Image (tube, rainbow, N blue to C red; front, side):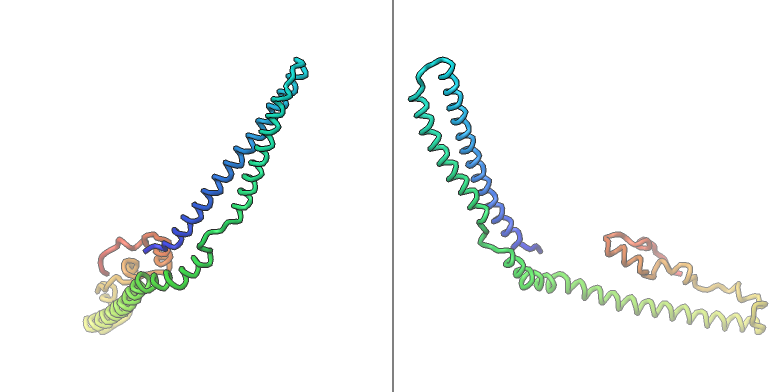
Length: 202
Protein backbone atom coordinates (compact mmCIF):
# COMPACT_ATOMS: atom_id res chain seq x y z
CA UNK A 1 0.00 0.00 0.00
CA UNK A 2 1.32 3.43 -0.91
CA UNK A 3 0.17 7.01 -0.46
CA UNK A 4 -0.26 7.95 -4.13
CA UNK A 5 -1.60 11.43 -3.40
CA UNK A 6 1.92 12.67 -2.63
CA UNK A 7 3.08 11.39 -6.01
CA UNK A 8 0.36 13.43 -7.73
CA UNK A 9 1.41 16.44 -5.69
CA UNK A 10 5.08 16.02 -6.63
CA UNK A 11 4.20 15.51 -10.28
CA UNK A 12 2.31 18.80 -10.33
CA UNK A 13 5.12 20.61 -8.50
CA UNK A 14 7.68 19.24 -10.95
CA UNK A 15 5.56 20.47 -13.86
CA UNK A 16 5.40 23.95 -12.34
CA UNK A 17 9.13 23.89 -11.69
CA UNK A 18 9.72 22.80 -15.27
CA UNK A 19 7.74 25.74 -16.61
CA UNK A 20 9.64 28.11 -14.34
CA UNK A 21 12.86 26.65 -15.72
CA UNK A 22 11.69 27.48 -19.25
CA UNK A 23 10.88 31.05 -18.20
CA UNK A 24 14.28 31.36 -16.56
CA UNK A 25 16.12 30.18 -19.67
CA UNK A 26 14.10 32.49 -21.91
CA UNK A 27 14.81 35.41 -19.59
CA UNK A 28 18.52 34.63 -19.54
CA UNK A 29 18.58 34.34 -23.31
CA UNK A 30 16.83 37.69 -23.68
CA UNK A 31 19.34 39.30 -21.33
CA UNK A 32 22.25 37.86 -23.30
CA UNK A 33 20.70 39.32 -26.46
CA UNK A 34 20.53 42.79 -24.85
CA UNK A 35 24.12 42.54 -23.64
CA UNK A 36 25.32 41.37 -27.06
CA UNK A 37 23.67 44.30 -28.87
CA UNK A 38 25.08 46.77 -26.34
CA UNK A 39 28.54 45.27 -26.83
CA UNK A 40 28.18 45.52 -30.62
CA UNK A 41 26.96 49.12 -30.33
CA UNK A 42 29.99 50.00 -28.17
CA UNK A 43 32.40 48.29 -30.56
CA UNK A 44 30.87 50.07 -33.57
CA UNK A 45 31.16 53.44 -31.86
CA UNK A 46 34.83 52.75 -30.99
CA UNK A 47 35.66 51.68 -34.52
CA UNK A 48 33.95 54.81 -35.86
CA UNK A 49 36.10 57.03 -33.65
CA UNK A 50 39.24 55.22 -34.72
CA UNK A 51 38.51 55.09 -38.45
CA UNK A 52 36.34 58.19 -38.89
CA UNK A 53 33.80 56.08 -40.83
CA UNK A 54 30.13 57.05 -40.83
CA UNK A 55 28.28 54.31 -38.95
CA UNK A 56 25.12 56.26 -38.28
CA UNK A 57 22.88 53.81 -40.15
CA UNK A 58 24.32 50.83 -38.32
CA UNK A 59 24.02 52.57 -34.97
CA UNK A 60 20.40 53.45 -35.72
CA UNK A 61 19.74 49.83 -36.59
CA UNK A 62 21.44 48.65 -33.41
CA UNK A 63 19.43 51.16 -31.38
CA UNK A 64 16.21 49.76 -32.83
CA UNK A 65 17.39 46.21 -32.14
CA UNK A 66 18.37 47.16 -28.60
CA UNK A 67 14.99 48.75 -27.90
CA UNK A 68 13.23 45.62 -29.15
CA UNK A 69 15.59 43.34 -27.20
CA UNK A 70 15.12 45.31 -23.98
CA UNK A 71 11.36 45.18 -24.45
CA UNK A 72 11.57 41.42 -24.93
CA UNK A 73 13.78 41.10 -21.85
CA UNK A 74 11.33 43.05 -19.70
CA UNK A 75 8.52 40.79 -20.90
CA UNK A 76 10.51 37.63 -20.13
CA UNK A 77 11.66 39.01 -16.78
CA UNK A 78 8.09 39.80 -15.78
CA UNK A 79 6.94 36.34 -16.90
CA UNK A 80 9.59 34.73 -14.67
CA UNK A 81 8.60 36.91 -11.72
CA UNK A 82 4.92 36.07 -12.18
CA UNK A 83 5.64 32.34 -12.52
CA UNK A 84 7.20 32.34 -9.06
CA UNK A 85 3.77 33.01 -7.60
CA UNK A 86 2.04 30.23 -9.54
CA UNK A 87 0.68 27.49 -7.28
CA UNK A 88 -0.55 24.06 -8.21
CA UNK A 89 -4.20 23.03 -8.31
CA UNK A 90 -3.48 20.64 -5.42
CA UNK A 91 -2.63 22.57 -2.22
CA UNK A 92 -0.53 20.97 0.49
CA UNK A 93 -3.52 20.97 2.85
CA UNK A 94 -5.38 18.72 0.43
CA UNK A 95 -2.56 16.19 0.67
CA UNK A 96 -2.67 16.37 4.46
CA UNK A 97 -6.44 15.86 4.54
CA UNK A 98 -6.17 12.90 2.17
CA UNK A 99 -3.59 11.33 4.49
CA UNK A 100 -5.62 11.85 7.66
CA UNK A 101 -9.10 11.02 6.38
CA UNK A 102 -8.44 8.45 3.65
CA UNK A 103 -5.04 6.80 3.56
CA UNK A 104 -4.24 6.43 7.27
CA UNK A 105 -7.65 4.93 8.24
CA UNK A 106 -7.37 2.50 5.32
CA UNK A 107 -3.80 1.62 6.31
CA UNK A 108 -4.89 1.01 9.88
CA UNK A 109 -7.74 -1.24 8.80
CA UNK A 110 -5.91 -3.24 6.13
CA UNK A 111 -2.31 -3.34 7.37
CA UNK A 112 -1.72 -2.32 10.97
CA UNK A 113 -4.80 -3.64 12.77
CA UNK A 114 -4.46 -7.25 11.49
CA UNK A 115 -0.80 -7.24 12.50
CA UNK A 116 -1.64 -5.76 15.91
CA UNK A 117 -4.30 -8.43 16.40
CA UNK A 118 -1.79 -11.14 15.51
CA UNK A 119 0.67 -9.60 17.96
CA UNK A 120 -1.95 -9.53 20.70
CA UNK A 121 -2.69 -13.22 20.09
CA UNK A 122 1.02 -14.01 20.16
CA UNK A 123 1.31 -12.06 23.43
CA UNK A 124 -1.55 -14.05 25.00
CA UNK A 125 -0.07 -17.33 23.74
CA UNK A 126 3.31 -16.33 25.18
CA UNK A 127 1.82 -15.48 28.57
CA UNK A 128 -0.02 -18.80 28.71
CA UNK A 129 3.07 -20.73 27.62
CA UNK A 130 5.26 -18.85 30.10
CA UNK A 131 2.84 -19.49 32.96
CA UNK A 132 2.56 -23.17 32.01
CA UNK A 133 6.34 -23.48 31.81
CA UNK A 134 6.81 -21.82 35.20
CA UNK A 135 4.11 -24.06 36.72
CA UNK A 136 5.82 -27.14 35.29
CA UNK A 137 9.10 -26.11 36.91
CA UNK A 138 7.36 -25.66 40.26
CA UNK A 139 5.55 -28.97 39.89
CA UNK A 140 8.69 -30.96 39.07
CA UNK A 141 10.55 -29.30 41.96
CA UNK A 142 7.81 -30.29 44.39
CA UNK A 143 7.94 -33.83 43.02
CA UNK A 144 11.74 -33.87 43.18
CA UNK A 145 11.72 -32.77 46.81
CA UNK A 146 9.23 -35.51 47.58
CA UNK A 147 11.52 -38.08 45.99
CA UNK A 148 14.53 -36.68 47.86
CA UNK A 149 12.68 -36.88 51.16
CA UNK A 150 11.43 -40.37 50.42
CA UNK A 151 14.95 -41.59 49.63
CA UNK A 152 16.35 -39.97 52.73
CA UNK A 153 13.94 -38.66 55.38
CA UNK A 154 16.76 -36.63 56.93
CA UNK A 155 16.08 -33.81 54.53
CA UNK A 156 18.59 -30.96 54.63
CA UNK A 157 21.95 -29.90 53.31
CA UNK A 158 23.37 -33.15 54.57
CA UNK A 159 20.91 -35.11 52.46
CA UNK A 160 23.05 -36.83 49.86
CA UNK A 161 20.24 -36.77 47.27
CA UNK A 162 19.55 -33.02 47.35
CA UNK A 163 22.20 -32.23 44.70
CA UNK A 164 22.31 -35.60 42.98
CA UNK A 165 18.68 -35.68 41.92
CA UNK A 166 18.63 -33.49 38.79
CA UNK A 167 15.99 -30.92 37.84
CA UNK A 168 15.14 -28.88 34.73
CA UNK A 169 17.86 -26.31 34.10
CA UNK A 170 15.23 -23.64 33.64
CA UNK A 171 16.90 -20.49 34.92
CA UNK A 172 20.34 -20.84 33.28
CA UNK A 173 18.75 -21.62 29.91
CA UNK A 174 15.81 -19.23 30.08
CA UNK A 175 17.42 -16.99 27.43
CA UNK A 176 16.23 -19.55 24.91
CA UNK A 177 12.56 -18.97 25.50
CA UNK A 178 12.07 -15.79 27.54
CA UNK A 179 11.51 -12.47 25.74
CA UNK A 180 13.47 -9.63 27.33
CA UNK A 181 13.04 -5.83 26.91
CA UNK A 182 16.27 -5.63 24.91
CA UNK A 183 14.86 -8.24 22.50
CA UNK A 184 11.84 -6.01 21.86
CA UNK A 185 14.11 -3.01 21.34
CA UNK A 186 16.12 -4.88 18.71
CA UNK A 187 12.94 -5.94 16.91
CA UNK A 188 11.76 -2.32 16.86
CA UNK A 189 15.05 -1.40 15.17
CA UNK A 190 14.66 -4.16 12.59
CA UNK A 191 17.36 -6.27 14.21
CA UNK A 192 17.31 -9.93 15.21
CA UNK A 193 17.27 -10.64 18.97
CA UNK A 194 20.27 -12.53 20.34
CA UNK A 195 18.14 -15.53 21.28
CA UNK A 196 16.30 -15.78 17.95
CA UNK A 197 18.26 -18.84 16.84
CA UNK A 198 18.42 -20.60 20.21
CA UNK A 199 16.44 -23.82 20.41
CA UNK A 200 15.93 -26.61 22.90
CA UNK A 201 14.32 -27.04 26.29
CA UNK A 202 15.64 -27.11 29.80
